[in-house]
Structures are given as C-alpha cells and as structure tokens.
Length: 109
Image (cartoon, rainbow, N blue to C red):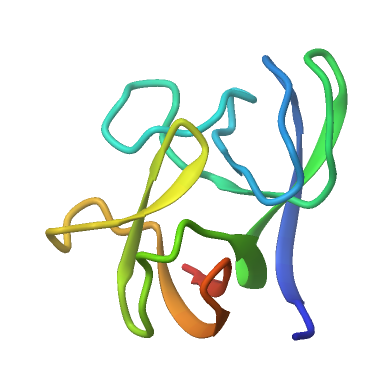
C-alpha cells in the first residue's frame, strides 16, 4: 500500500514516538479533546523527545491498528493511537482501506 503525502510538517517531539503514532503540533502523542494534544498528523519515523520530526498532516498513510477499524470509520486519537470515533465532532481522519486485521490506511483531512 503506497502512501500519498500531500502535506507534511516538522515538529519538535515532546516525548518518544513510533512511526505511525498520531502526534500534536506540540510534539505530544495526540489525544482528541485534550488542549495542546489535538491531532495534527502521523509520525513518518520513530523519534525521541527533543528530535525534530516529520508528521504527515494531509494524505493517505498506513498505520497499525487493533483490529477494530473498518472501511469508512471516522478516527480520533487516544495517546497517539487511532481509535474509532463515535461522533463526527472529533474526527481527525477516515479509514480508506483495511488490508489486514493489524493495519489500516487513513485519509488525513
């Protein structure tokens, strides 16, 4: 599954992240609804606190998942992980493909 990056930004990480974690502009693992930790993009590489890291903000990106995501699900972030949103308000991304029970492709908006 190819990634399609339309927009990426650099952030200084405030904590350690793994490739595929959802990150805020403040460099924290993102949690939807938490001030200063709102989702901004998905980490393109592993990084440590203090590192300057690239996050993909708009485009299609492959992430790991826990097997609960399905095509068309709206996604929010909880501690950097993609979680199905139960309402439309906190949606950060949409699942565009589910190639396996352990992975999904997200369309970042």
